[in-house]
Image (cartoon, rainbow, N blue to C red; front, top):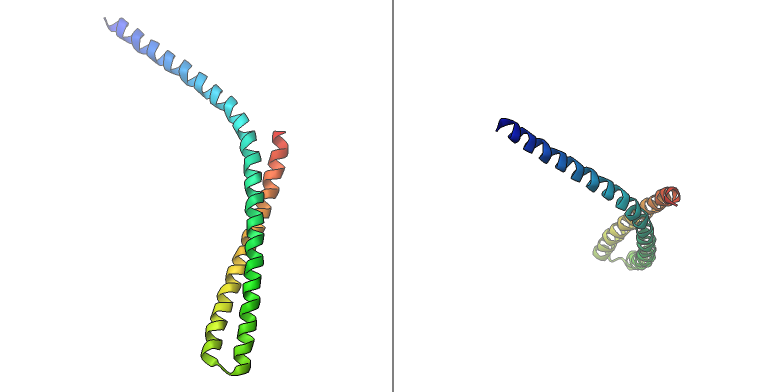
Length: 122
């Protein structure tokens, strides 16, 4: 009875090992093709994200130009309270613009890296 139990356990372990090996190789093979497709989708997403970032930068620059014009008008007219509010708004918009420009640089580096690794997939 003891030998039968040991043989049953060994048979189950062998079946699990074969199943795991078959699953692993199928996953690796499928992963290669999914990797190629993912690289292309990732690049498309990065380009789309980058174009949206440039649109936001243009809108921010227009907002900053309006804030500067309003600030200059407040300075000329002597409205100190409005001048302080406009200066704070201008500083906030400029920090947001700098953050967006950093994001653009990050996206450009990511696109460059993705393009380099995508060359390897071809």
